[in-house]
Length: 227
Image (tube, one colour):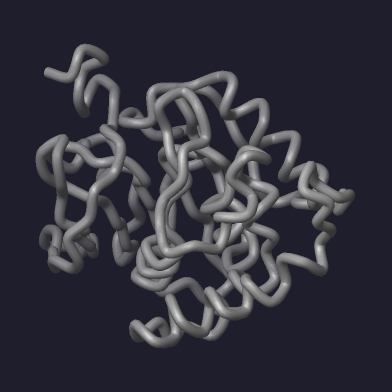
């Protein structure tokens, strides 16, 4: 699992950069959730990026993973996860499996994760890696993420790791009353990270950091041609 890469680096070569990532990029910027910090100290992020980018795996930036998609900046992964306020007992829906890294972080801090990805190749790679890392609480499928995964609804928390023009109604419908949803909303050139809490009388929304995500493509998001 942790064999040397093309640069001759084994798992031990990445441990210190990973610890410094958590200290300098997460804790220094106000991330306080102990379980999120623990998960990101332990999780080998370098395994979730193409081998050509492994030496940059713990940099303060997003990285390409193929298919015009990216693995999110570590800080953004931490912020979005922390906003869900997970305690370890939740059932979480993730829209946009991508590299599988955010899925893996969720798998360490939640009870069960259901993740939807529209690109078959990415999902196959992510599933293989998660299985190799021993995850048994993460279920993945190829589907239009803007439609959610109704089979296992309602969810305690939902995270959307792509930017859309508005919150897809099917996802809000699949969120449990009292549940939390985090999503970047805005144009294709930039978004604002927003948190929604579903209440018996409606939805409470708060705005957080500015961000730039790949576009959320689907029936309730952007179309494939960008419109």
